[in-house]
Length: 108
Image 1 (cartoon, rainbow, N blue to C red):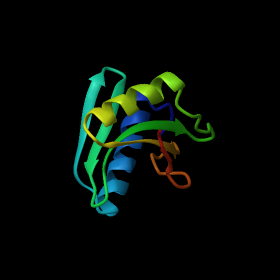
Image 2: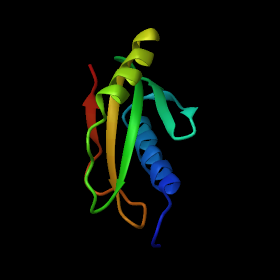
Image 3: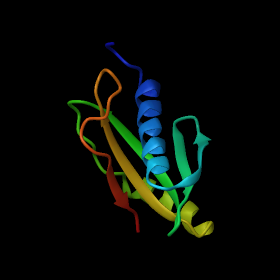
Image 4: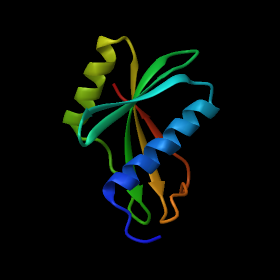
């Protein structure tokens, strides 16, 4: 495949997260674009409603945590809507397949 664009990488990671959420009982899964390079996924669960900020990396690159600023922004949006904020770290390969598991971090 070779040389995926950053947009392709991001969309692939978001698609993996959306699939995981659906497979694990979440519903009303929607993607919201806040700014051109900033999207979040919202989902309704049986225990909690969540907002997820997804970070996707192309293997062999490894995930790094959100900055304090990014964490604060997503937590603020989540608290306004009485949701729980999460970060999802995704690693994919050149074929857009998931490498390992999605790493979840509850923010706050």
